[in-house]
Length: 134
Image 1 (cartoon, one colour):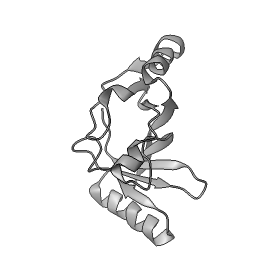
Image 2 (tube, helix red, strand yellow):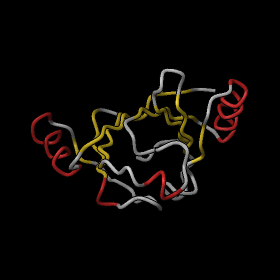
Image 3 (tube, rainbow, N blue to C red):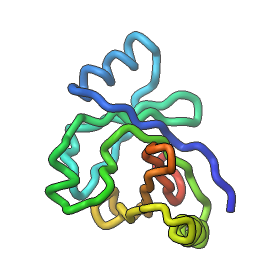
Image 4 (cartoon, rainbow, N blue to C red):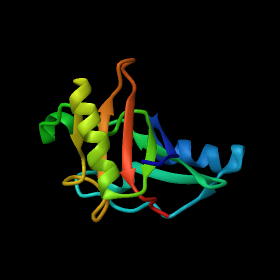
């Protein structure tokens, strides 16, 4: 299984204002931000730096309870990209065997994308996604 870093997601009280800051002050490039099934499309923005992405996510403490999720995918996190469905299956099997809680976000996320979230032993939210969004 080959992993590569895909993106880092940061939290914002105002995702548009923070995205403007990263564009105008830091110099990141805007990129296409696809819609997700269960999230307001105006609540997050994606920016690019080289071949990596920064996802700016509006704080929304109501999402996980509303969808009855044990893991909240809208918290700050980093994401690994995997190259196959078999790799997603392999990582979820490893997580299960290690007793690590994980969640398949695919039914709620970007249509056609396979996304799995976990909370690592240090309490960090981590995503594994099949392919890139670009």
